[in-house]
Length: 510
Image (cartoon, rainbow, N blue to C red; front, top):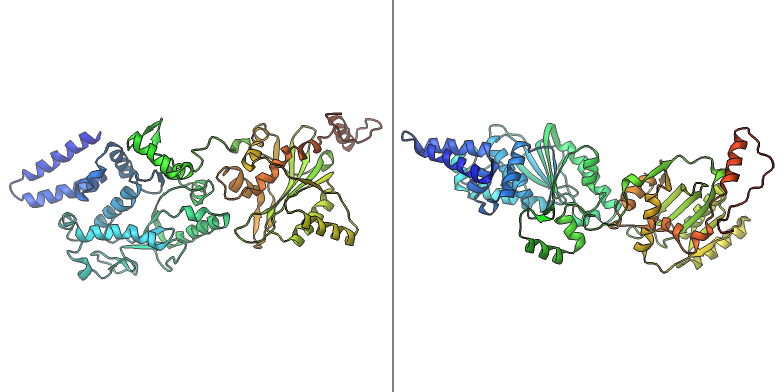
C-alpha cells in the first residue's frame, strides 16, 4: 500500500465513523483508536500532528516498524525520523495501549535521555486529542493529578498497579544507572556519541555500561536500539557481533537522496565534513573512504617452527604513560621462505623507558632476532639507557635506527597489497597484560581498533609500526630465508638427510 492509498483508507474509515447517527462521537473515538493501533503513520501525522512526516519515505519506515518494532538496532541517517518514529511515536503508542508498562530510555548521559522523555512528557500534557482518545490512561492535568510527573522522577499514567518503576523513566547509560529496577521496555537512543569513541577505553566503558543495563530489564523485556555510528569498533558493533539485527538507512541509496533534495544533502556534506557526514548521514564511519583494510584479507597462524624464519624486532616507542597518549608498539616478525610475514608476538602498551627496555631485552633473549629496529625520533635517551643496561647485564645486541619522511597514512597504505596478497599472518591469539593490569588479546585489539577502523582509528600505533616492513631503510634489511635451506631444515627434522649444508640468509639481490 502506498502512502496515498493509506491516506485514502484512513479517510474512508473516518468518514464511515462520522456517518454513524446513533453515537457519532463514541464511534469516531473507537475508529480513531483502531487506526492508532493499526497505523504508526496515522498516530504520527494525524494525532501527534507531525505534518512534516507526511512523506513517502517516512511512511515506508512507519509501516516497517509497525510490522516489526522490537529487537532491532536501527541506524538511520540524522534527520530521517528514527527517534521520532521509534522513540517518540512508538513509545506513546505503547503507553496508551498498555498503561501498566514500565519503560526506560537510556542515552549516553542523562541530560540526553531526559530530552527524549521531555518530548513525550509535553505531548502527553498538551495533546487534547490523545487525552480525548484515551481518558482511561491519560490525565487531563498530569502535573496536578499524576503520582509522578517530572523528568527526574519519571512519568506515571493512570494504572491499576503500583510498581516502584514509573511508566516511563530516563537515565544515562554511563552516569547513574538505576538499581533494583525491572522494566518491561528498554529503549536505547544515542548511547554512542562522538565523545564516547575517543579511545578504546571509553568504548569499552560504554559497552560495559550497556551490558550492565540489560540487568534492569524484566524477564522477556522488549529492547530497541536507535543510534548513530562514530567508530567501526563501537558498542553498536559489539551488539551486531552478538546477534542483534540491524536496520540501516543512509541518506543516499543508489546515488540518490532518499528523503531530502540533492542540494540539501550536498550542503550537508560540505558543512559537516567527510567524517561527520559519513557517520551521521551515511551511517558508516568508513563510508566516505575508499581506502582501508578488509576483514577477508586476514590470515592467522599458531607460532611454531621458528627455526625456519628470519626474525626481526621493530620498536616504535611512545615517551609517556598518560591515558590519552600513544602506545609503545613492538612487533616480533619472522620472514618465511614463502615471502610471507609471520607475526610471532606483539606489544601495545603504555610504558616507561625502564619498562620498554625490560620488555625489549626479554623479547630479544626469547627470539634472538637477526636485527632490532628502533624508531629514531626521541630515541637518544632510549639508546643511552639500553646501552647502560647492556653494559650492566653483559647482554649486547645492535640497534638499527629508522625514521622516514613519508606521511603516516601513506606509509600505512603500503600494507594494503601485502595484506590483500595474504602475506601477513597474525597469531591466532596474543594475550598480554596491559598497564592497567587487564588481560587483552592484542590480535583482536589490533584488528578491531586499528586494522578495520583505519583510516578513522583513534590510535594507529600498531599498524604504523607494522608498516615499517615496507620502509626504505628497514625493508631491504629484512631478508627472506633461502627456500632450499629451509627445506633441508624441514627434511632433517623429519628424519631425512640431504647431505652437508650451510645455513645462510638468502639475499635476492646477491
